[in-house]
Image 1: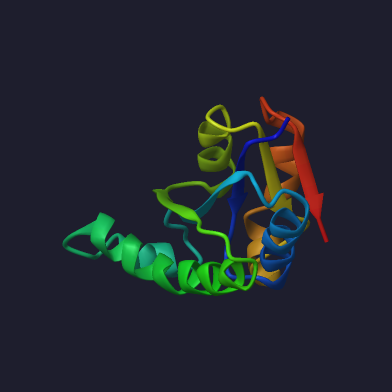
Image 2: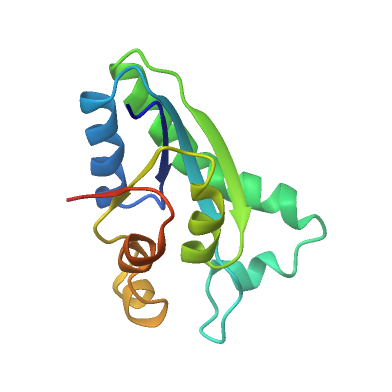
Length: 139
């Protein structure tokens, strides 16, 4: 039985679909929404500006707030409460490092911008191939 589910979210529509899938199909599970603030890159992503912050963890929490607000709003439609986590670093690696604490990972088939998909690679594919627990890819 799946009782603890990790749902990585990046603010994309596919991430919302993944959460909606969990809410509809596993209403009794403990759901944790994970938002990963990526590592800096030469392409000047949001994470690069994060490196300039005085308190990186507080800045990461602040950046995750919008994703968590959207997730909480969606969960409220199903009368479900969510746990939330913020991690710093490479998204696929952070998800995989967290996966052991859950029975399954439900992830959107793709997310972020076109640049994220081209530069960072397909996070869902990396998680699917390397996860220590079952992975459901929602689209």
